[in-house]
Length: 110
Length: 309
Image: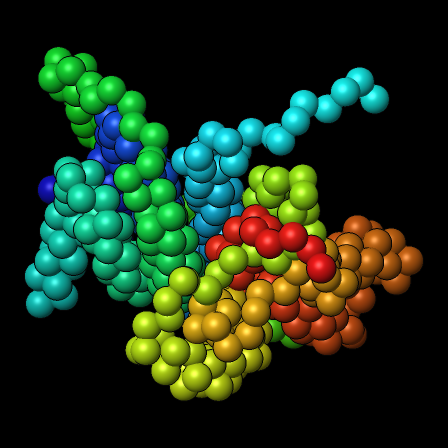
């Protein structure tokens, strides 16, 4: 087991596993919604790192890391950013004063 | 020596993550998250994944950081807070999360050996694509469908953000410029963009053969555009403006068009004719870079805040 921890990337894989726990705790236990979004990002970063450890182990053919997981992680980072942006926009809307957030007058039947 | 560096990197990452969770001041937590994103970029460099490192630093550290800082400033004091958890339930949550971490840790230590890898297969087909960077080949040739769908997810998120605008403001411009532009910001907004644009275009161009590519380049260009808008040098475009809509849709539309032409001129959907593979991939990348830049900048800018003119 000790030897396994010294394999290339395994240390960062373990770090990723720990980050998943920390991020998940922030999502579950934070009272503030903004911090939950940050926690979600830490959780995602941890999962990407575990996947990065997989890529590093898949070194071969003259490359230090398997390119397929790398490409998937790049895709994942962009999608995570889009999701965060949507979450932040919803959060801002939620925090707006009620009179501004509510429609001016209810629409009649169309 | 490298092991020592790695251990220090891991220790600082974990310390920053814990700080983000326990720090009572939200702003300080978000700044710690920015530092976290930069260190994470270093970790990716240590994992021999420079393409991911560039993406992580540009999007994970930079883009998400700006997004969160702007959100924190916008909702300060008015954010919705739930009742804090009791001590017991907090402890239970911590135990559950720790259990998940330990389980994942065991999974990391017991990966199959020898590790399965697609690197030889990816390299074998490289000459057919005319590319030199296997990550770009995976993104735009072998797994082009993932990239296409991802572009559409980004656009869907943008539609989601835009649709949060009140009815009267639909199609109007978002508000990016802070009420008072600090002098350093105005200065940077004048000085940085020329360099940033050159770096962005370079990253896009070398992406075919070296670390770089559409996402990284698009993010750098988006950051430069945001800087110009935040510095108040140029107003943000109206969300209904035709040039903006064309820039946003151009990349995915070109990608889809070439994908369907694959039926007629190659082996099927998303297949490239062998002789034209590289020019087609570069054309798709160019259009995608513009789309990514526009979409990411507009995602940070948020929904319309001014009535359309």
